[in-house]
Length: 147
Image (cartoon, rainbow, N blue to C red; front, side, top):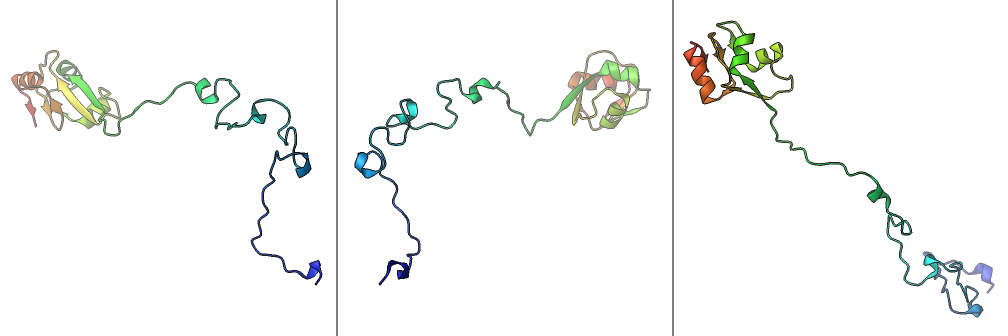
């Protein structure tokens, strides 16, 4: 039987070269394919990802960034009673939407609270807005109401 008639094995895997087993092995002797000298020629060399030969690694050269932003944070804004009396006529309804239209509160405000700083002289109806006890007292003294 001739060698060209022998069927080839399926899934055949060749063994890896055994380096450093003397000149007679055909692969090695002296430097064994590792070049000459240096860190990579030594035994036990394992290069870690991001290792730059002793330089400060890239990830440490970059500036820090990030932080934390809470997804459940509610953007609350504050309005004082004194500013309400300056911007609204007596008998006017004050809601979050009217405050946004007048520009007293930012457009992205999700919640508004009225505080009691300043004086109020007009009858104002406050709806759907949080209000402090002192602000409530001042609004009701002026003849307004809070719903």
